[in-house]
Picture: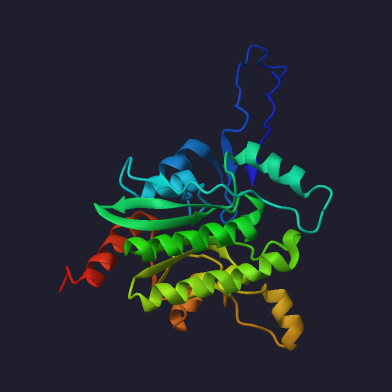
Length: 282
C-alpha cells in the first residue's frame, strides 16, 4: 500500500520553529511486515522489503533492466490496439487512463534481448495494467513472440503476473488461452526452449494456459499461483484447504514448479538453463 499523503507536521506549542517535513509519495507500507519503508531504498533493493524480504511487484521496465543486458532489448512493433467487443461504456476510458498512469500500452511487453550475450525472445507482464489481465492484445503479443522464437530459433522466456483472463473482453479473452497454447505446441515441436517464470500473483486463465506449459517453470519466493482463489475453491469443493497451498513453496513441494529463484539470481539462472539446453554446460 502506497502512503500517498503524509501531511506536514504542525509545530507544537513547545517548538514553533520546527521545520520537520516528510515528502509526499516517498514511502511505502510493506504488505507483510507493515513497516513504513523509504521507496528509493526498496527500488535499490530490487523491489524487495529490506526489513522482511517481501517481494513487491515490478514494473515491466525494471524487470527488463534486471534480466537483459543493457541496451539489448528491441520491442516488437505490433500495430494492434485494444478493442471493446462488449461495447462497455468506460472500458476504453480506463485503458487510456492506465496508459497515461503506467507509461505502458498494454499489460505485456514482448521483444528480443540478450542474457549474458545469449539472444532470447522475452515477454514480461505487468500487474499495474488491469492486474495483468489477458485480453486480445496480450494474447496476440505473446503468440507473436512465440512465433518469432520459432522463426529465429531462439529460447523463449515469459514472466507472468496476472489475475487471469480479461472479462471486459468476454469470450474473446478466453480464446487467448487456446491461441497461446496452440502456438506453444508448435514451439515444442520445433525443439525450442520455453522458460516460464511465475511472479506474484499468477492466476486464472494465464495459469491455465501458457504460464504452466514451460519446459522449465521457475517462480519467485512467496509468489501466489493458482487458478481460482482459496475461498472460491473451498466453497466449490466444500472442504478446507491447507494454509499456503497456493504459494510457490507449496507448489515446489508438490512438483508443480521446478525451482524457486531469488530475484537477484534470475538472470544467471536463466542463462545457465539456456546453456544446458544448448549443451554448453556438462
